[in-house]
Image 1 (tube, one colour):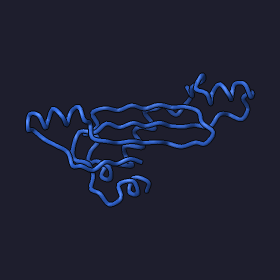
Image 2 (cartoon, helix red, strand yellow):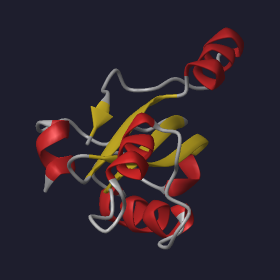
Image 3 (cartoon, one colour):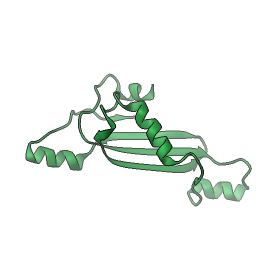
Image 4 (cartoon, helix red, strand yellow):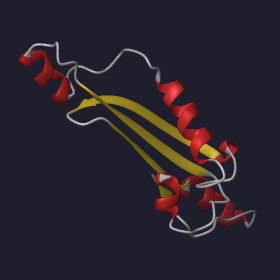
Length: 118
């Protein structure tokens, strides 16, 4: 649903893409105030399940055909988990400029001018 909204009626990207995923998890309420503050400042990172690859697969499955045609288009992927006050997932997808610049230079391919994010 969010991917459809972010694309705002635009067609899926048809080129190499860079994808960034940031999973924000809540700090356990059972932790001390000091440990909670360390988690929120980034000094403590969530090293518990689910793993980042589980988040990644679920997100990819949810946006294929909406943001891009196939997950083979993802040429750069960065995924992170952090603690935050409110849980959320931030996904950014944009044309992979490094790949596109080389393709344009050699006249092999380009990309639609559409940018999508969720």
